[in-house]
Length: 566
Ligand code: FES
Image (cartoon, rainbow, N blue to C red):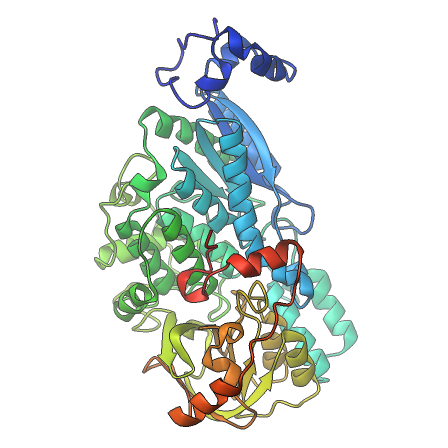
C-alpha cells in the first residue's frame, strides 16, 4: 500500500500521519522499516503500548507479556502497535528506607514518560499496562493529560500466600517484624513467613493501594469491566490484554477520549466504590491528581460528602479478611458495582471504554449466585459509612485522611510523642519508647519536607506487631501503605515543612482524634500556637540537587493530590 493513502482504516488523518506520509517523510519511514514495518503497517494508526515493567519486584514482572498480548489485539484490528516501557518503584521493596522518597515521585515520572513517548512519536492512541502502586494512577493521569483514545489494563495481584493453612499477604511479614522486635516471634518463624507470603508474580494481595487503584481504573470506565480483579497468574488476564488492544482500536474509530469518560460523575462513582470497598488512603490523593489532569475539580469535601452516604460492603484486607484473589473468585469488581447500582449509589449512565455505559456493561455480566462474605448487599453493610474519613481541626486545617475500615478504635485523646523522621519513629517504637495511650507524631515527611511522602508501613506494622494497634494512634504528614491498619492518620495538611501546625507539636501536648466527628485537634490555646509559630524557622529542603530537589520545589499539598505545579 502507498504510505500516503489509508485504505484499511478510515481514521488515518490522525497524529501519526504527520510522520509517515509523503516523500519528505522518507527518513522517518526508513527508521520504521529497519524494525521490519512495511508501508502498509505505516498506513495504519500507530498505537503506543506503554508498559510499566521492572524486575525490581514481582508486581510488574509479567507486564511485558500482557503488553505483547495487547499488541496482538491492536495488530489484528488494523493498528500498528509500538511498545515502550516506563520506569517504576516497587513500594514494598523501597519501604522503610530513603528510597521510598522516590515512590510518589515515580507517579509523576511515569505520567511524564508516557506523555513524552506518545507525543514524541505522534502515536494515535494509548494502551497503558500497570501494576505496582503508582503505575495505575500514572497511566490514568497520562491518559487524561494526552486526551487521545486510551485504555488501561491493571496487571493484577499475587495469588494468596499460605502457611499452615492460613492465608498470608505481605502485610503479615511487615507486622511479623514488629512481633519479632517485641520478642513475640522467633527468627525461624519470621523466616517461614518470609518464604511463604508471596507465591509469585503480581501486586500485593490485599486491598492495598495497587489493587484499589486497579479497581478504580475499572470503575472510572477506563479499563475493561472485570479486567482488574483476576490475579496476575490467571490465564484470563492474557485474554483481557488482547481485548484491551482490540478495544483501543474501537475507541480510536469512534473518537472516544479519556475526558469523555473521566467526568465528574465518573469520579463520583470511583469515590463511591473506594468508600464501599474500604480501599487505600493513597487513592484519595491519586483520584485528585487524575481529576486535576482531566480538568475536573475534585476536593476532599467530595470524599467527605460521598463517604457519608456510602456503606462499606466489602470485607477486604487489611481491615477485613479477604484478598483480591478472593474477590475475583466471587465476581470481581463487577460484583461490587452490581451491589452499588442495585442500591442506587452509582451513576450508571457514565460512558466507559466499551462504548457502553457502566449500567449496560454490568447488566451484561451474569454472575452466578456465589454465597460469600467478601461483598455483601448495601442493605446489610459491614459499616454504615464509607471506609475512609477526612479529618479536620486545629492540627489539620486543610485536612487529613484515615482508613477507618482498618481501625478497631476511632477515638483517642493522648500525649504526643514526636519524631522528625520515619527512621526516628521506627527506632522509638522498636525500643519501646511508645506506650499505650500515646499519639505518635511523625513530621517533616510531607510532599515537600520528606520529600515524597514516604509510607510509614514499617512503623505502623511495628506498632501492630508490638500489640499497640488498639491503644496507640499515629499522626503524620507522610502517607501510609494500603496495608496499614490501626488509628493511623496521614496526609496531614498543611505539612510541617511549610509551617503546618504539625511543626509546632511538643512532646506531651494532648492530641484529640475523633473519626466519628471528623476532628483532629492539638489541644493548645490559639495564643500558644501563635507563639510557637513565631519562633519556628523553616528547615532547609533536604536535597539540594537532583530529582528529589526538583520535586520538592514543584510539589503541591497532599490535600490537592500532591500534583506538580509548573
Ligand atoms: Fe507492589 Fe505492594 S509492592 S503492590
